[in-house]
Length: 445
Image 1 (cartoon, one colour):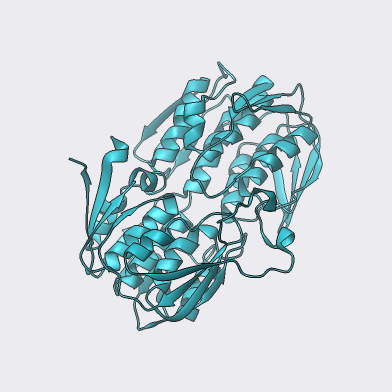
Image 2 (cartoon, one colour):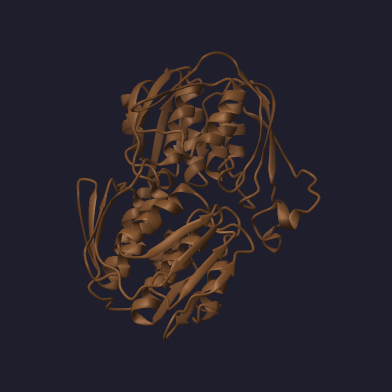
């Protein structure tokens, strides 16, 4: 029934009050994989109760592990793996399923993993992960007939590896692989996101020996065995930005509990430029409307740059800014699926492909995966008055962004594809209701 759900949003209400955000999705999914490296219990606090987390838990259980959840605490124990293969159906729902290559190879010496799924944001190959694991000693082949990677390794060994392009998931997969490999691994051009450092801290608490020696250089000394641990996931940066923009665009005033400048610097700097209001407090950050917004230009980039996950909500905010705003997407080849939906709501947005001198190094995706009709930038003409429409969600962050747009629009907007929002936001509409939003979930008749 999930695909028949829809949201009905009547705009015009100012959001006011205090809200808490969930533990970071991009940490929760990875620490669940890391918990499979030991036969002892791993306790994870502040885990978000979202559909992506439940898919990862189902994979662990199918592989032979035991996972229990009470409130927002998960207890994970994988005494042993009873099989080496992840089903095509499970992997089709979530990209991080590919990360199970690491614990399966380290503990069972074999892994059969489908080509992973998740949001369709253009090609999202795991070639950098596969290449790194192959250099560590894994024999990996891809069967185009059934869509599975077949991998085996008697022993993974430490390597000196430089990622050709920045890769968040690839960095984390090789870190997880290296902690029980023989010898030292050095990863260069490694991802620098705070979520990666949370994973490193968790693995070190399990007995791993990992240190970030430079911003993009990580050293891992392999150990013989890991043990159980207890960790608490920090607040989700993407949720913070979503609620912050929802508060400002509705001319409201909201306080986000637990929000910190760390990891949000680029967003806050752009908010200063656009004229959005915020105030850092001891227990979080207050975001509020303080006057007309100004147009900005944004180029997404790996951390510490402006996150690709922030560009869709930022585009919605810029529909209310005075002047022309540019958003240039460099991380994914096809991440403007929400634009035509915003146009239905009255937004004035043009697609464009800016001239780039050296696209091979400028863009983080593989140019060979680019396709005709993909655009890498948009120009937003503002301010425009948004109105009601019937719209459909193309991916997780686009979904949250359409909700933000609907909150600022006149009339009642119908939003289809709500299951995609559930992948990354726990009780999204309930928390918005508590801030004063007129939003409800319903089913098709």
